[in-house]
Length: 69
Length: 251
Ligand SMILES: [Zn+2]
Image (cartoon, rainbow over all chains, first blue to last red; front, side):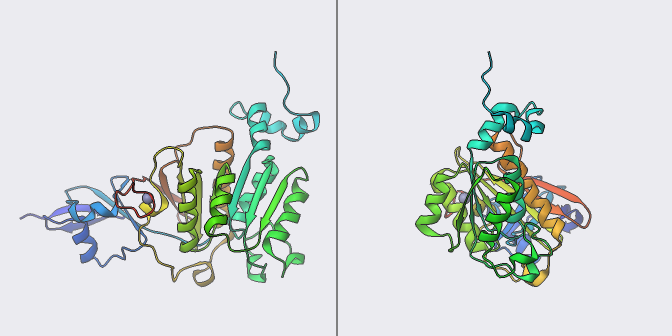
């Protein structure tokens, strides 16, 4: 299977499909507690991460909660 | 025939608001009649409160149980050296009243939680989350959700800021939908540092959005999360979606 490329926090990132959002986060060892994942400008609820298929060209952004104030 | 809502003194004092078509006399009267709860009077709350006070927001309820420390003065610009060692809410009350003596400022110097938090949220037109920890953020979110009180939440650490708003009067996602399973963080202002204007930027935006909300202006920020990168002066905006498994708001 050919690789696909996504934009991860603005940087190109290659991966081999099929891969779900959860699998990618796991592979990259992303801290998932208090983390918001947005795809193409919209937050994906954590309940959908395991089913969400990554496709060519999508833009993924990772945000961690800031508590300070 | 128009009936004047404001007295002469108020018309002078708030004349720059009256020039704004979106605020005007009716909007100013709404500000004078409004009640805002600020949870936390550190770098966010102390700055946001100044703008609300100056704008004539009639009632401020300010909650914080900290006393002012020397390390706060670098960013919490409401306070003076002479306030060191005082409860922040007491010092803030005095300073806010010196900005606008016509306000009512009520202080809560205990940890605002449980029933009391829910009651204060219920009594407020809008809540500003200016707190510095995840447990409080979750509790404020829950109280606002349960009382259908709009929530304007700000956060900052180091060079980064976040702004997110939830209008719980309509169906809306919540803070816990956005940031599920959050735990207290290693990185906070005390460990990672914070530059004053970064937290001040977020606080100023919280105040802006509160004033717009009270004046019944629309905002694109309801249901949206924004991240501010103070190094590169870049903003990222994303739409928040509700999580059907959210422990706070899922029905
Ligand atoms: Zn929720």
